[in-house]
Image (cartoon, rainbow, N blue to C red; front, side):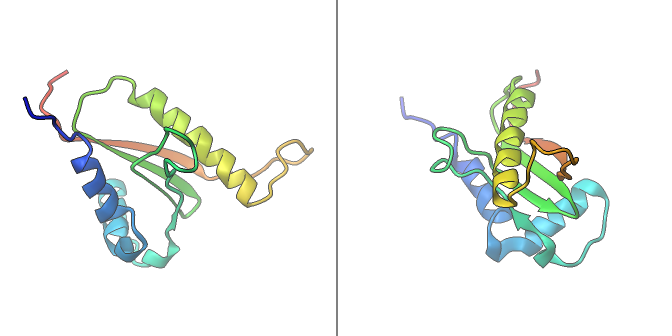
Length: 128
């Protein structure tokens, strides 16, 4: 029996909406999900976790836009654990954001972080 490549849709989703050269498409997807009409794709800051950075963990697409950390996952296989996985992705993304911006989370002042928005696009056939 031939092996099924379950990542082909994932890679296509990431390519279409997660690359610097396709920011217009990312903004279009964001506008569709949020019922908005933003027009400046350059306001998007990609934050996607790459497997090389966090061994064995990567997400499909994440970006910050207007102080919202958008975490988008495309799934073709039913997975009831996606909320837990997205929580883990969010934790890694916040850790990365805090380090990159040299924020002091141990100080006496509240650190302002982007608001998380977690979205799963499911295009599988399971009806669970």
